[in-house]
Image 1 (cartoon, rainbow, N blue to C red):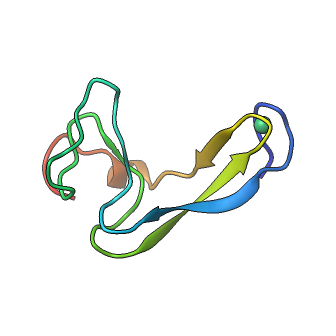
Image 2 (tube, rainbow, N blue to C red):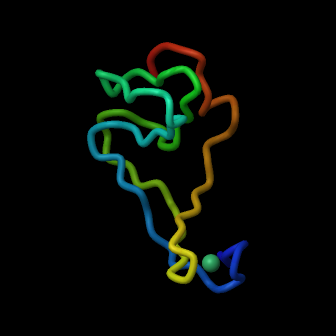
Length: 83
Ligand SMILES: [Zn+2]
């Protein structure tokens, strides 16, 4: 993958989801007490809970950023509830 900012090749790697799913939260939202819940406004990045998963991602040394492909929209955004 080529970095969208500097157009240099990115290093392929992964984000590990070891015992909890990898999620993204807006800065004003607290993380869930139990890792099985996705807070409102959160985005589910990895697919599973309690199973080891590697989420493919790319790192740019020049820009110091990580880029990931998210799951399909209908599988990553929940308004409340469990994964
Ligand atoms: Zn870059």
